Image (cartoon, rainbow, N blue to C red; front, side, top):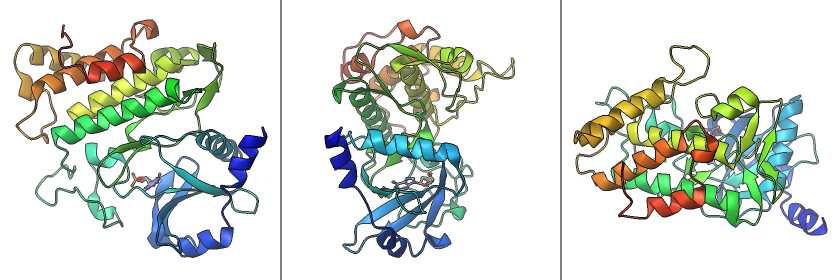
Length: 327
Ligand code: ACK
């Protein structure tokens, strides 16, 4: 409608100014490869830092996803969603411009990465040298803040924006972190707008990331707010354990290993062996009740039956309810 067109028009960026900001898309400014092409860091004339997604040429599907991202993000505003500053869609270049988030993706903080290959020197939380896994230190309070912030962002998508948006590709590499380690959900290329009364949709084109995909989506192409809740559960468990979910629904032997691992750890925890459950990188002074609560919520979210999984509204309440009863 006209309102949408107006807001999209106000987002238009001039190609030349982005060329200047990114030093003509120089390699030195390249942050990495995203879903539909490279992402560059840039500095606008007013010193504001930006991240620019550039569509790779001849990427037919990428163009669909890029337009989907603009049309949805333009309607959304929340502290836990990445902010789209503008786009450039008319010329030979297809670009999306976002706020720059100096701590980049959560993925880097959780799993082993070679930090020497990073060309950005403004990431603040590296543990240098000694730790062979080269993961970055995340204390418990930060992990909780990240879990909660993602939860609030998802709740907004599912319910509070007055739209019903299913993200469909929630994963650690799509969570960006600002200078204060507040999480922002990014990558809306696969997101879908649902009608108010619509509860689930069937697709024959299953796109997303194995390991985070709810089984009903991976196997039958059914997606709903509850398939996002499943992915959020996997994320919570990854944030708590620092282990990547290797569940890929392919090999029979590995098919349930992550949930098995977590369940085992959970049993250890409830037997009082609490400190073993959490990532070895966590500081010793873990407020165990909070960590337990998150673990419990994560396990509720990854239940096989979508009906049994809580909604994001339930989850945000549970995250903040200190007396929630644990099984
Ligand atoms: O994990 P990273 O360092 O964080 O590598 C990926 C890469 O670009 C490709 O997606 C980084 N990235 C994406 N969007 C942003 C942003 N808004 N601010 C900072 N880094 C970003 C992401």
